[in-house]
Length: 280
Image (tube, rainbow, N blue to C red; front, side, top):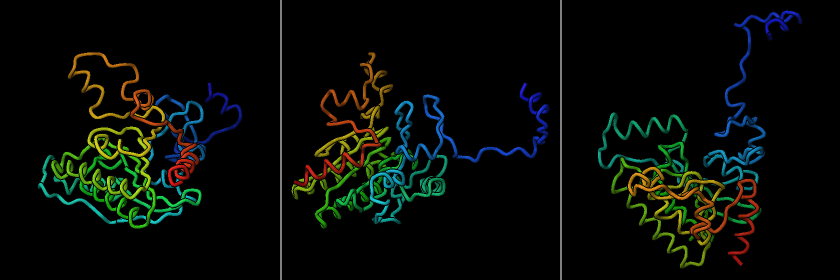
């Protein structure tokens, strides 16, 4: 009866003149909770009603981690080539260009240097919005150069992983990044510099099989999917039901693969404590 009440109160706005809410003003979580974007930002993109951690990218993580959101980004214009001349429905170059236009990113990883409560930190962060956060040559090279910067300036290094795995369009070139980043992390270890790995939803494939699980401290966000092959693939392969919560951050913590689970609202404070502890 809303139309009747509107008429009674003298509200006669034509449908053509009605204003819609601006896009991006509200967010609906997977659990159906509705939250205003401003409130979501103030809660580090965690829904206060159910603690659901919204998937975010490097822009949001840098806002959360760095003091006053001040940082220097490294290797900003690095982009992928097409060494294998990969073609599907369209060329790899076209796919890269379309993803760059859609996301405003050059590739699936950004590296930045800044301060966390006054402490120096180099951060490489993956963006799932760019071809599923897939690990290609640019991702591996940016991480490697970020580690080089940490080595040259004697700074700790934080890796924030969010990926579907290796980028199939680069085949062997993509898989080579697993060895390259792991070798660089070995140099960081030899130098006695801390490496913290933050696993977010999802962290899978070759990323999990390399740098994501090599931290001096492996921390994860609540309920993050972490694994190599996905649960459905494993279930179909072995023909058995999987344990409840299989490949969740909580399950991996129980098995000893994850050291701690950190709510994103506590991330900066926890990082500060960890850095002070490891650097001492």
